[in-house]
Length: 250
Ligand code: G3P
Ligand code: MG
Image 1: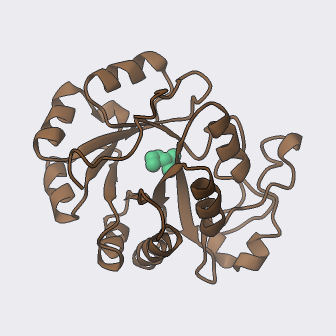
Image 2 (image 1 turned 120 degrees about the vertical axis):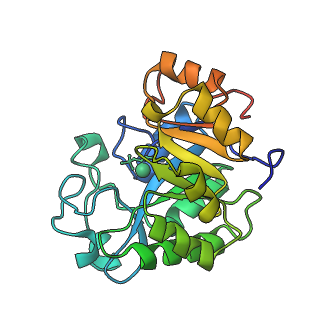
């Protein structure tokens, strides 16, 4: 993906719409969209029967009516859970979305996506490969492909082998000395770093090496403005109500 071809907007809603609606649910996406966001980051892992679903944690306890590991349940069992009540009664009954449902919703509305591949422990390779293949198929008619990202280099490597044409970003909470080498080795198009690791020099270094730079999770408008002034290419935020996306969509 070349410099000129970068198709993604600079503002990306985190987990759908941050903290204003239950994360990683369709309700969250709708909420983010109501503030003008048109690109969404969300977390994907596999159910016990290998189906891609949106869920941040390895366990169900925090954000659903279920408990235990996500991969202990088949998709049919996950579908019976309530993923909204933990946030508030207005969201009661909100289901755990499948990646397929989110593909339909986002493409019908012209929205772009950043799929964070977030495997349960031990399922890194399998999840990377399965999510990449699903993404390839679900977005086969889309003008702009999903951007895949992961903290797991194993998952990204599996995604690269399964769907080499889909763009990938490496998530890094801390920048190791060889961060540029890792991006090269995994064939990434972008660094996706904790924003605390970034300054103008790091962003410039990534750009000089041919990589875009995204970061998470920026909720302070002043910090967002600094990062964008330094040339940041993608800002992942919970603060969809206080950080306004570019009106041009650029
Ligand atoms: O994709 C960036 C960000 O979502 C990574 O952190 O824990 O919110 O998934 P987390
Ligand atoms: Mg995430």
